[in-house]
Image (tube, rainbow, N blue to C red; front, side):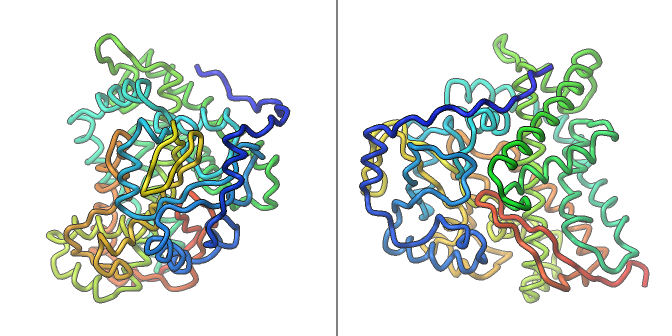
Length: 441
């Protein structure tokens, strides 16, 4: 069983390095990407700022983001990467732009990073080894088993709401889609499922916690990650003793060239699936429902041939949603990007929410186009070694969910105010009422 993560005692502040002092002397870009007000605005309002930067200053230097969990004297700001081509370049230059210093916008305690981010916050050679072992567990047999469960869970979710006529789409549909599927994949015991789902949501929406006190938020995050580790440890120990045909059993048995995953590796991946695997599909499902309501002509086009048009529609929904808005890298050395000199240790933030609206790549990106071809969105990453391992799983979940919803509840639509979160990582939908004609009437 893993060692439970403990909050570290506060370390004395260290003086800024000469490099950090040099960063402080750079002029900050006048565009606001750092304030709480910016991240509390609408996606359309944020896009106006992104469009200005893409056109005139695609690689720009900004002050540290507001609302950080810890004060880091070396955090003097960040480079904003807003164009599609530059974002793809950063993802593919993994020797220059590292993940090991963290992949989230905020400055957070290292212990939290180590416990929460898993192999996506690793660099080669560790990342290479762990990813190979994880990929080896996703066998054709595993994927076939998952496919059957995805279809069954889509039916189950619609069965549960079909007679109601009105529900909160987030709580009764979007949240449950990945929750049921991931729990089934890992054969999580029923008595742990609600606890894990609530803990996952809390971690993903930590910027929306009431009060906003950084120390309290850190304590809540440590408590949540400890809860993940304890439950994961129980499940891993049970599967090592009594393996089945679930994903955790496949992970404990995965082996390449004599290498195996440790309990800590599996526990870390467990936490990653609980949070990132859950929230990406959840947000895409919610944003997809809102888009189908806001663009009725596109919905009508889709329904003319649902079976034939669903695959490209899912790609456009994922682009439109951009469920993960930002990803951080850290410069490994002094280098150049888009004509700017980047200094070793600089934060480099990739704005996926901007790149997916880049007019150099997408014609009329402000329009939902369910038949968009080609659709070179970067919602699953821009390629390179960190491309999303669960991208096919997400696509299958979205296709099954919308197929079931649109077939059985053809007039389902958003009927009231949609409430969004204010985080800098997930593009969160907190609540969204929908109405529909109850099935059978």
